[in-house]
Amino acid sequence: MYKTNAWKTYDEAQRKALEAFNDGYRAFLDQGKTERECVEASVKIAKARHFRDLDEILCENGALKAGDRVYKNWMGKCFMAFVVGSDPLEKGMNILGAHIDSPRLDIKQNPLFEDQGLCYLDTHYYGGIKKYQWLALPLALHGVAVKKNGEKVVIALGEEAEDMVFAISDLLPHLAQEQMGKNAAKLIDGEALNILIGSEPGTEEKEPVKKRILDLLRDRYGLEEEDLVSAELEAVPAGRARELGLDRSMILGYGHDDRVCAYPSLMALADYEGTPERTLCAVLTDKEEIGSVGATGMGAFYFENTVAELLNLCGQYSELKLRRMLQNSLMLSSDVSAAFDPSFAGVFEKNNAAYLGMGVCFNKYTGSRGKSGSSDANAEFVACIRKIMDDNGVCFQTAELGRVDAGGGGTIAYLCARYAMNVIDCGVPVLSMHAPWETVSKADVYEAYKCYRAFLKDAGK
Ligand code: MN
Ligand code: MN
Image 1 (tube, rainbow, N blue to C red):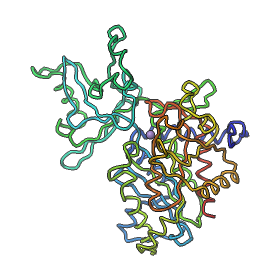
Image 2 (tube, rainbow, N blue to C red):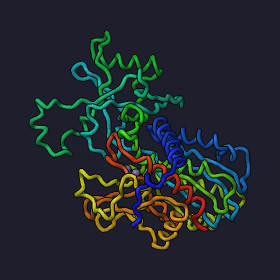
Image 3 (tube, protein in one colour):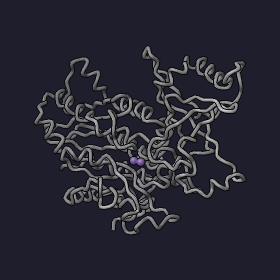
Image 4 (cartoon, rainbow, N blue to C red):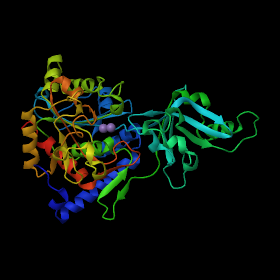
């Protein structure tokens, strides 16, 4: 049942294309360690492929027509791009959606403190993490601090070979008798996730190490301690994505969830040439890992607002046409799947699990318990998808998120389904999902790209 090892299907030329695409993906991962950095990288790619900034077109009182390529940067944390089709827009779009936020440790608003001659940054974890995995690991700091005058200071420390890194200490096994008896959730307290940032005292009497760190922040970035109140700094695993395995068949990287779907979605649209009939769209959203909330989450109206602007710029706007356009759209809500892990076979059901190297994975539904919180795709739509994949020689598989009642999770699918459009969850299988370093198969990354290209080209025909 739809389980072909993708590696076995490639000829020389396809192997080359696969490697080239994965090189691009690794570069994207290295440039985009935060949602903001992913948006910057996406804008760069879009501009190079002749997409114009929607906000600039609005400023110029411009207009759009079939074949035009536009992008929209929303708050620096979400990215949307469109290729305008020749059909009336109310006939709907082919949409690729993915998220670009990943689990991490956010730095608190009042983060700096000194204790026994060590200076720390206090953190609040973001998304579903196993806290113990973030100890004794080189961490990088990425983000922005915004001063009262609006000046934005961009920070990215810990990625270059000569950069310093940061770390959270763990307890030595010799003294961990009590700790080792605790269950994994309690192994480390959320409030103990403090990042070591300095140890050399300055000349002051009180808090000399913290004072010295503040001097360094002032000298290097012109930042005062109060400026950290209006900062968004994220601690992420330091270092680049790497090829994994003696055969180099996999990629070990931070934030595959969900940049491994975001990058192929973006590239499938960017690589589209010519004028499509249906309008094509890629949306890369923020805040999925904490429930798609906030002004940059898929639950906000930024996507609908941008689609309304698009209709208006095409001279086709009405409230009714906007509703029709959204309702008549078809969407791949792309998010990672849990890859079958032989070391933890008990939480999977073998016939309905995703396997590394078997291609892009469709989840008709996700959710927990009795499918709670899922967006269950219609059988009719799944049939259309099967046909598109088979017609275009895409290796794909179908899966559930683990055994029934083993746990569960959700995606952005149900939020887009509110417009009554057909949506299905789809994505790349990942080992060690939500760990600081996650693993994917290069073959699955490539099949995702092939899948998204095929969907843009053929969906709705
Ligand atoms: Mn995800
Ligand atoms: Mn996730």
